[in-house]
Amino acid sequence: MKDAMNSIATYARSIRASGLFLLSFLALGGCAVPTLPSAPVRPAIYDFGPGTLSAPVVSNATPAAPLIIAAIEASPAFDSTAILYRLAYSDAQQLRPYAQARWSMPPAELVRQRLRETLGQQRPLLAPGKNETPPRMLRLELEEFSQLFESPDRSVGLLRLRATLVQPRPGGEQWLAQRSFVVQRPAPSADAPGGVRALSAATEAAAQEIEAWLQTMPL
Image (cartoon, rainbow, N blue to C red; front, side, top):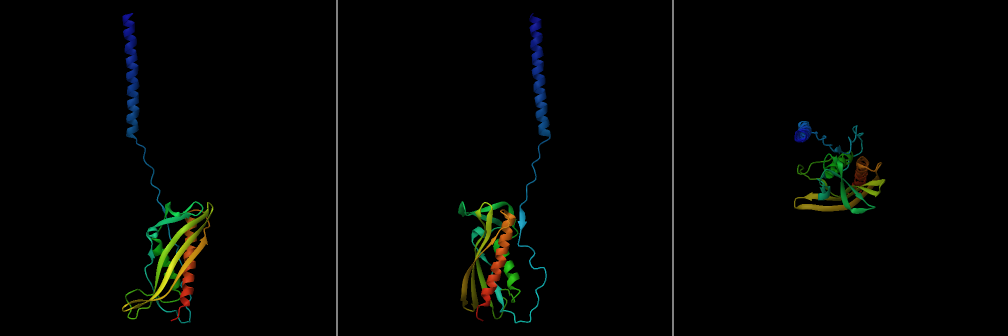
C-alpha cells in the first residue's frame, strides 16, 4: 500500500513539473517574438494650394503705388502650425487643435504669402530697408484664424485681420489709415480638410478686400 502511495505522489510531481516546463516554454517563446508597435501616423500637411497657375495679364494701365508688406504679427495662439477650431455651440472660448493635421507653416506666413500673390498683381511689392525713397508699408495683425463650428455638421473658416497703412519717414512712421477685416467662408466638410478650404477662401477674400481698400487711399 505504501509503495502504491509513493508511486501516485511521484506521478503527481511529474505532472506538475511538466506543466511548469510547458508554461516556461510558452513564456520564453512570447519573449522571443515580441509584438512590434504599429508605425506612428504622421499628420497631414496643408497649405493654401499652388496659387495662380499662369502669369497675370499685363495691363497698359498705370500700376498702383509700390508697397511693402511687413511680416504679419500674430498672437501666440496662432503662432504655430496647428490647425485650430472652436465649438461655438459648446465652448467658443476654447481653441482646439486637430490631432492629425498641420499647416505647412504658421498661418501668419501663409496669409502674407497669399497677400503678396494677390496684391502683387496690381502693384510692385518691395522689400523693406532697400529703397532710397521708402514706399508705403502695410502692417497686419492676425487676430483670428480658426474653423468655427456653429453646429456639429456646419462650420466656417473665420479670419480677422487688422491692417494699418503707414509711410516710413527718417524720424519714424507716419500713420495713414487703419481698418479691420472680418471674413467668413463656409467649410465644405466638418473636418480639417474642410476647415483648410474655408480658411484658404477666407484669406483670398480678405486679400481682395484689402486691395480694394488700398485703392481708395489718396497718393
